[in-house]
Amino acid sequence: LSAAQVAALATRQIAALGTDQLAGLSTQQLAALTSAQLGAFGSRQLGALSAAAIDALDPAALIGLKTAALAVLTSAQLAQLGNDAAGASHIDLLSTQQIAALRGTVFAGLSTRQIAALSTAQAATLSSAQIAVLDTS
Image 1 (cartoon, rainbow, N blue to C red):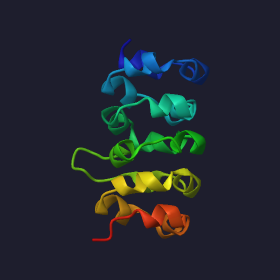
Image 2: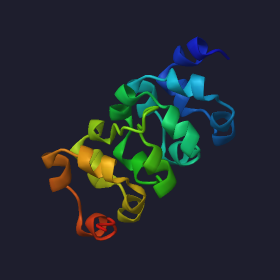
Image 3: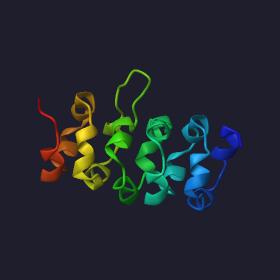
Image 4: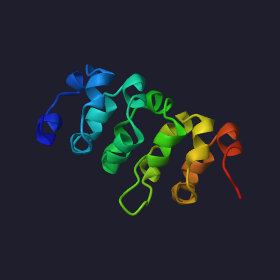
């Protein structure tokens, strides 16, 4: 399928994709997904994406990710979440609910730049477990 064809899939079709099918999507195909389509991803589907696949997601579409799905991200996936070619983070595009849903252990993978990109409201939602793993050195 072309990126345009993948972008034309309905959310119910996206939700029905198996992890093996998602693994077969190219970074260009993943980059074409909309916020609504990303919202159709379940935790199993999101957890199956590689760090490179996570990096390919359109930063503007990240807000569509369900909080329950985000809870399965690994530190390697989170470290790539919304990084652009220059390494700038778009983690600030996540809602406070999405930030709060992330497991504390994945925060060890955040760069200083990603931590600095969090808004005051996002930082206020961090749990003690999330804060405890931040490298302050």
